[in-house]
Length: 599
Image 1 (cartoon, rainbow, N blue to C red):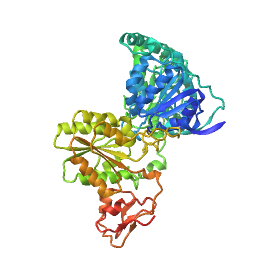
Image 2 (cartoon, one colour):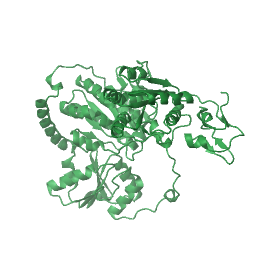
Image 3 (tube, rainbow, N blue to C red):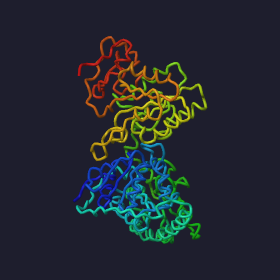
Image 4 (cartoon, rainbow, N blue to C red):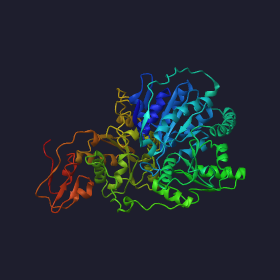
């Protein structure tokens, strides 16, 4: 039957149709919906889990693939950094069952710290990579990825980008699924990574990848097309991923000029034979690809090795942007210039004034705002560092409460380093409840073991909020919605030697401030857990009312930055469509003009 599916949903159903038996991952936009869909649409014999981090997810999936199960691991591109340690070794050891590592790249970046390109990681790790350009293609291609994985005994990377992950398309989903194969672990020296075996396997990997260059040259996903009799054109386009769709739209808008196109679905190992044949008679080629110039470099290398007289253009030549997400408009302009055809006049929409910039802010009623306020008040007049982390609470920078932000879990350890460099600085490190389990715990242990002086502030809103409210080990709920062991953050902190560990409701403003003061004055590593549910998951109370005695001083707006508060003509105004009635502003107002109404 036909279903309207998001790209991530298509990938998930493609994997389920291909007989995947174990699905693991860690939430991260733009990859999250793939695992969620597997959890919703699985059969009873398919195991689906949110792992504590990407490293754990990959290792669980690797173990299942050792038994012959088909497995899927999901993450975003920065998650691949966390998973890279086991993945690099797994590339040498190999797998028995098909294993696909879905890594969603985020050009822009729209919701990430980096614009790294998984195609480049594929070359580094010597792993095959599949690069779908549409949801329909992703649905078909992931089944083919499992076939290649099993045939060559290797994990394969699957690299959709944001627009492929979040686009929608009508897809024919078959009712029949490949049965999930039972797993059998056969004891063998091959599963242990030792130097001599690694050397032998490295040689095999190099030989395999040379073979795949030839195999991928006949793979149907790598296709050559021609527009308007452009089979013998002197100019050509080489595309990859969603860049292929941008190029297709651009060429249609330009009147379908005569040109031939090579669409590369397997950027590594690069299909050299197909590319060499494609370039016969071509004098100039433009590469349309987001993020790294992977195709461009591969073509330059091929041209050098084969002494081809062809000019390769793209990012390295400045024909297309070296960073950022592409649009049809930017690709159209580059293609028009490359082909020497007239570009279209800018549409009216492009001529209108730009929309006003709306900086990202914490939601109205977010408990993190109250937590940040409490710590800031406790640290007033003192030399203090506020080390941030990855999550909703990164937005603490709007309140001056995120002096550093590196990667998940790094706030706790970066704070230790800052104090080693500046010993009179008191350091607060902020970490969310999900991030605490992901990579926060080792940093806390490091602080205790090495005698650091630090206050760890855990912002516990009982969910993985930024990526869509997925469960984690502290919620007591599994990925498939069943009950799970609920892991206690306070007990973990106490067990590793943190003292004191204070848990408080951040909306109890005075108690929240005092908790931060007490923790700051304690020797060694202390912790405050500000515990209150995410505002998006609770029923709002009646909005705060503004009384006539408001002097319009704006302190509530300046101190909190709540989007529900704004300056009116004579008094502060409350946007009743946003206000959740949390009451934080009522504790800030110096004249008591903001008051909570009875719920």
